[in-house]
Length: 545
Image 1 (cartoon, rainbow, N blue to C red):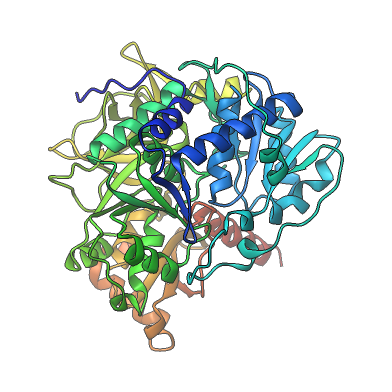
Image 2 (cartoon, rainbow, N blue to C red):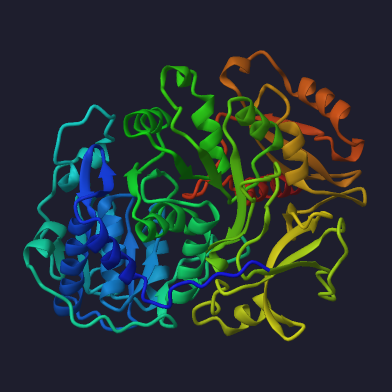
């Protein structure tokens, strides 16, 4: 087993070390405005001082963080840690009632929020929330740029006046300094909420030690050096972006070019302008980047590797990237493991593969009922024992007990993901345990069907769900986004006919629906459950009519 000696320190110590090592080097680049490591460290300290002295944040308190990728997100995240508190990052797509549930569940009274999202939390002032810091992204647009700046980023600072509300600019100007840094490696650090695909979202309790292990491990795995410039495009509230686009680069001392929302033209321009070598993203972003009809106009020769997870990169798409000289390294992890537990080795990656267990990770494929380990090639549930496995779900002991089991005297996380291991020890995803389609007694795994369908040249994106069928019980339905050049040139029957030639008959979609876009989470994952729920509801209405 590969082992790793990760630093046994508070995560904030990484900010201090990099500020001492590279004080004048840009850490964050935001639409051509740079924030150096020393400036970042100083601002995080000042915001931390305000949190402690004006917001009464104490050690172990949970503080909500709600904004898009921006310098303020990163400064706010580390300011919360510097105040010995716990970061609770929220998806910017959440609305007022959802934010209220998170605030109440986490028992958080303080929030750092961006200006455009402030109206969503305004109704919570004075009740659930007592202290709010509001940030205007435009405060960090300090020099002209030719990059396309979204309106919500360029919007001037609004003058807000309400009890307990303070502008980011005024927080920095207060010049307050925090008390001693006392949170240790085994204190709570960050509490990301799961996406809720298996019910209500739950807060994953992570310590400084569990976060540190994953971020150091992934940086070492990919042999990251301070000279490498990265791009941060995956959402920072999600563990993939948080570790690959923020925490890891800060530890190493990398410059990070930030985009608050995915824009393939802006991303390509940034790669060319800043000689970006690498970035972490979900497959849908990578697909969109290289599907850009203007991609040949940019110099992308600096790209060394692309990596990510959250969903399997379709084999056909990965091959197209290889044909262009770009290798996409897939990995696997969850909110419960603070990102990657499995990674593909640089010297021998396999396509559409989760990779091999990372440092100090004991991962197995087991029978979901007996928890007995299965031999290579057999499909079962992936379970994980590792230093980065979370402590449990916040205030949910029953859910924690179901997720964490003992096998051979070790504490394992049940992932709910079905996979298999090949003879070389590489893990492959089959599907979610609860996503299987039962068509006339045949088990159909949507991820497998989607992977095969991506080989069709007309298909840009595909999501496979189950549809009720009077004869088969369930049948296979494919919801497809066609490539722009194929729109109007291909019909559903042509897709079905192609599938019959390329996969077993019981896997073939009997229903094909074309759409302009698939629903995606804030992290860029295709929300198959939303499509499934819509289909189930429509079938129920038809049945009752």
